[in-house]
Image (tube, rainbow, N blue to C red; front, side, top):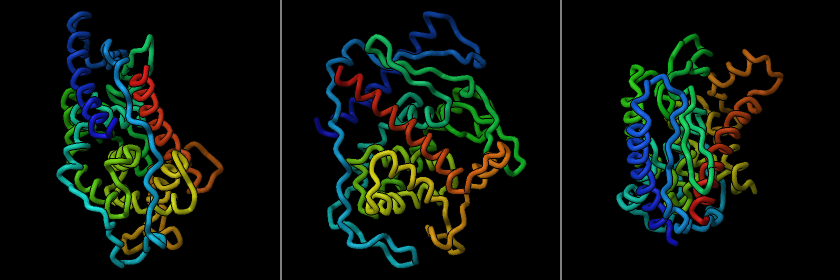
Length: 301
């Protein structure tokens, strides 16, 4: 089955989830926003007839050298790329707070729990969904409360419905740039859903520059022989190394993940800055991979 068909069905799944959520709340009575146990059935009976896209290894990068770490222009892939078509294809990932992309971000944040029971995919809102202090902001003395599926940095003011909408809108707002950045370094975003989701999650977690440098780092990781979640986690970690010219630079760059480094310091972890950031980035990459795995399991059952 083509990526387009698979992704279209994922979009329908997100819309179905919205309806399922409404039915669930209607049947059990309205719940207060402080309720941390709302569970939404993301699938219907016909989910078992779905066929997932067969996961293929990412298309090898054809560049003869690693991406430059200077101001030189990067090599533009020879294959054609239609941004509008790619945006149309991938926007469904973030269309609602229960769409696949937002579920992946929510699970990486710890605000969603995704599980399978009786061949049905369920999405549970954890206690953190309804408000939790961002541990990264504490590293520089800020007390910020996140709400909803993403790291909303208090933008919603505690209104859960608003947080859900704003998380989705912000993810969609960064998508065009992310698709272009992936394509520029030779990664086809239409064929590498894991790269798309991890770029979006980095945009959710950290400053813009890191999600923009992640594609470049991912190419380097794969050219160095890393694959799968290992490549993703390495590239996410490497994207935090930025030099004085705001370039991705593993040799001269400084690790800018001050929030994560502060967490490790508060926990008295005897590890290097790289190990500290990698620990978190591996956890998030694994969380996103587990979401994709569960969707595929349901699709083939």
